[in-house]
Length: 208
Picture 1: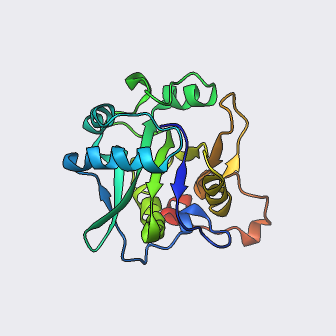
Picture 2 (picture 1 turned 90 degrees about the vertical axis):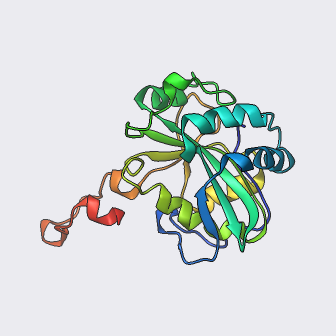
C-alpha cells in the first residue's frame, strides 16, 4: 500500500500538522477487526495501485491494533488511515530504501511496549467530510509512544502531495524515492535567539 492519499476535497491554505484543529464531528478511532475487509475494499477503490489483501492487512492489524484508524460521522464510515510505526532499525531502513513498504518486515516495526522512532503514513483513503478528522489523527500521534517520532509519507496522487505541502511536510534527503517528512516542532533545531527572549518552557510543554 505504498502511497499516501486519494481523497475528495482539500485543505485550503497551510497549517502545521500538529496544529490542525480537533474541533469536528468526525470520529477517529482504532479500527475494528470486522471492518478490515471493508477498509481494504475502500483502499482498492481510492488509492492508486494498492494491492494489499484484507488478510494481509489483518495480520498487521493483529500485530498492532493502532496501525489503522478509521474516520466516521454519525455512524457512517468515511475511510481510514494506516501507519507503520517503525523502530530504530525500521527508521534507518526507510531512509536507506531497505524496507519493503508493501509487505514490511516485522523486525522493522515497533512492538507495543517500544517507543516509535518514525511513523510512516502507509495509506490513506478518506471521502467527503472525513478530511476534517486529520486534526484528531495528529492528536493520536501526540500520545507518549509516538510523540517524538517524525512523520513520513510518499504521495501517490496530486491531492496527496498538495495535502503534504498544506500540512508542512517537506521532501527529505534519502535513498527512498519521493519521501516527505513532517518534523515535529519539538524536534526542530531552534533558531538562535537573544538569551533574554528565550522561553523557559520545555519542549514537552508544546506537545500538549
